[in-house]
Length: 136
Image (cartoon, rainbow, N blue to C red; front, side):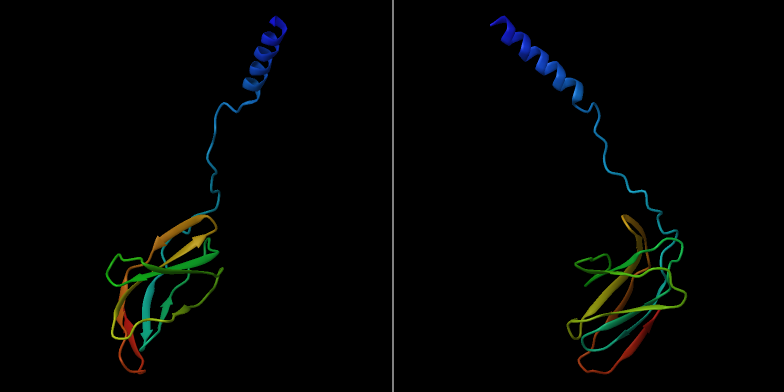
């Protein structure tokens, strides 16, 4: 009986030695984009909006667009891969409701690191298939 108690104590001490003493969270080592894209134009019609913005070229793997029905509303979003680019980037958001005002923002991301949000720009879809442009 004494030998069984001794074995249990020895087992507990062995387990204690191999249990990590501190647990650390995973770290994101990616560089954060250093500024926000400039969302400066939206071409809009009955059911879609094409956003135009300047790229962020210091550290970027993708862009994220969020939009909703009021300023700060982020009920919908899309993220798409896009690396370093010299020129204006455009992206079309489809399946919008007609005669509805939408508020859009865009952000550059680099892997696990999120960048800064652009200013919010809004535009209203129309009932017709006519296109119009909203400029900042």
